[in-house]
Length: 148
Image (cartoon, rainbow, N blue to C red; front, side):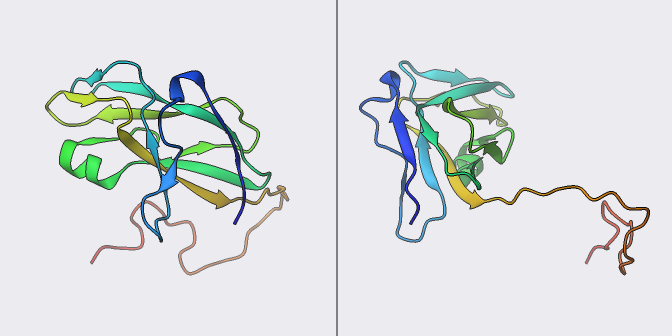
C-alpha cells in the first residue's frame, strides 16, 4: 500500500481524513470543509474546499468523482468528473459541485460531497508518423459501433 503525505489546513481541523468507507471501496470520501452552510440553487455550481492538500507519488493521479447516492437522491454531482489532481499539485483539493436538481441543496460542514480514487498514470512521448495501422473500426467514432 502506498503512503501519501497529507497536510490538514486550518479550516479542515476537526474533520476526519479522507478514508475508505468499506473494506473494498475504490474511493475515499471527501468532506466539505466549509465554515457555514452553502446553498446551491438549481444549476448553480461552487468550489467546495476539502480542508487538505497532499503530495502524490510521481506516476500517480487522484481522481475526484461524484458520490452515486448524492447524484441519484439529490441531483448533485461533480461538474468536471473525474477531476484530476496531478502529482505535482500542492494546493488544497477542491470539489466542483453542481446542483442539477430543481430544488436548493444545502451543503453542510463535514458532509461527504465526492470521492477520490487513486490511479497509476504513465507518461507518453509522441512519435509522429505518416500513417497508422488499420483496424476494423478505423476512424469511426461517436456512436459508429452501433446500438443494441
